[in-house]
Image 1 (cartoon, rainbow over the protein chains, first blue to last red):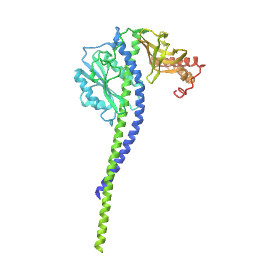
Image 2: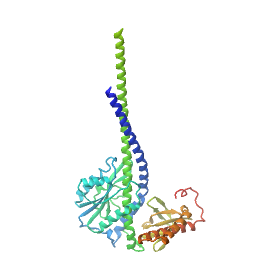
Image 3: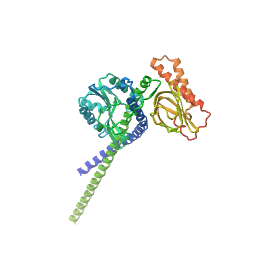
Image 4: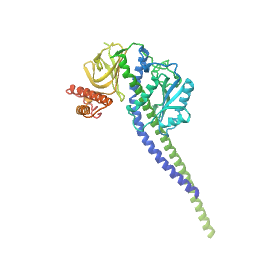
Amino acid sequence: MAGMIDIKRRIKSVQSTRKITRAMQLVSGAKMRRAQNAALSSRTYSDLAWELIKNLSKTQELSPALLKVHPKAQKMAVLLISSNKGFVGSLNTNLLPKLKSLISETGLETEVIVYGQKGKEATVRNALSVTADFEKYERTIQPEDVYPISKLISDLYKTGKYKSVVIIYSHFVSTLQQIPTVKQLLPFEQDIITKAHKRKTEDDNEDGGIVGYGYNYLFEPNPKLVFNHLLPRIIESQIYQTMLEANASEHSARMIMMKNATDAASDIISDLTLTYNQLRQSKITTELTEITAGKIALE
Amino acid sequence: MSKLYFKLVTPEKTVADQEADSLSCPTSLGQITILPGHIPLVGNLVPGELVIKSGNSELFLNVTGGFVEVRPNNQIVILADAAEHHYEIDEQRAKEAVERAKKAMTETKLSAQEHAQVTAALERSLARLNVAKKHAHRKTPITGEGVFNE
């Protein structure tokens, strides 16, 4: 019967699809574990570094270029961290609405710095202006990879034309949950983004941010040297951390997507096999009846 | 007596998180010691040795630069680029690193930037070696930790 051959073909094709998705699931599973470990183990460092700068920016009377605020500036720079490849579910598509609502909320002229192929395609499609396009490599991120990005961002901010610099990325919560997040990188204080966008952290208080102690810090050897050293390092560590988070999110999302695909393929295969067997059975029954009927007719 | 609450983190991991009586760390102005009740301070760390005293026990660590932050309420946070316990340092490898850096400085013609990098590398490996040598006589804790970490 023609129907049976079709079903057999379909089973074969779904089986080979399942082979591919299972292989991809295993690969991203391995990558996921590595990326998750990297993201989680450096979280303490970047959180503490962030607290430090929050404390310092409240207390400092002497202000280096990076601690200045530009309330009159009309521009905003956005670093959009996305993945290079698809198969990650809604991970990348969730980032864009965040960007759009941020633009409409602040009303600032927005320039996007893209990191990752998918984010680049989306910004181009939405006719947003792209300032810089950094290529994302499919290997472990090294701290050195961040230097050019952090330098560009610092230089942009130092021109005084930018009111703020924010990062949009997927924050890694667990293998099953990744949250698209807006993080304000510069200026360190005076939040421009509203509370609704922010990731809720444990140490958040009513203002939605970490409050400095209001103490005057002693600097060793002197404020200028400390800041020269500290500020670039803090910006680097924050960007580095968001990249690790985004990476962990990407691989987790892909692992889950591939697992779903594999499971779905298995479901389809068992459905098709059942139909196939039913057809086969009824075919045999029909043949038997025909033979018996023929025999009776001959007698 | 009040204690210091001390935390040493690197981008890779949290190296130490404990109470301590005093802490000495190498800053760009020289070795400073922090005791409970210190006023808030932020300082640059240079490659060198970090000594944590707690009761009768002492901990020696090698750090390769970073920052020290003293917060009110005796909280101390050290953001180090890298840190390791003295017994984790492989002396042989540290020696080789020093040799390599010295060789690189004498042999090849370097641009200003490369020269700075090599000098920094030399400084770091010398500091590691010093820490390792100084405490070589100390019993290493038989935990198995650190043996395979390198």
